[in-house]
Amino acid sequence: MILLTALKAGADKVIGLKQGADDYVTKPYDPKELLARAEALLRRVGRAPAPTDNLSFEGLRMDLGRHTTSLDGKTVLLRRKEYDLLVLFLKHPGQLLTRERLTRLLWEDDVIVTDNALSAQVKNLRTKLGLFGRRIQSMAGEGYRFDDET
Image (spheres, one colour):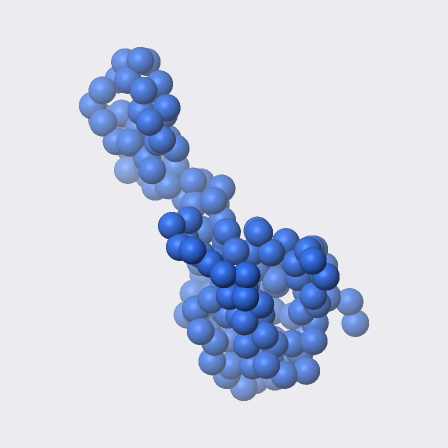
């Protein structure tokens, strides 16, 4: 949450931040600065708007602007969470992504997520990706890793 207010006193800022605001902007404000602060906040919490670039690995292509996925030139229809999960794997190749981190990034804070929800999303994603899905490796008791080695 970003507070946009006419209150400029230091004490007001402190109260706003202690009440839960992530940032504090006073009027008059520069709309470009407010947008930049919002984008920075979204990056910090892992929910930044999708950039308009592409992700690719071998025959897999993701157009983040159009929200499409293809594998070896064929469209792969992914549900929202499957798509978001694949983006996370491609943006963090070779890295362990813990179950806790993936759950936090894929679901809102006020949503109760069962232990099996993430497992089901990974299973569905692997199935839709066929042989390519084998690159998503389970790390027992910890999380998942996208294998970027050939």
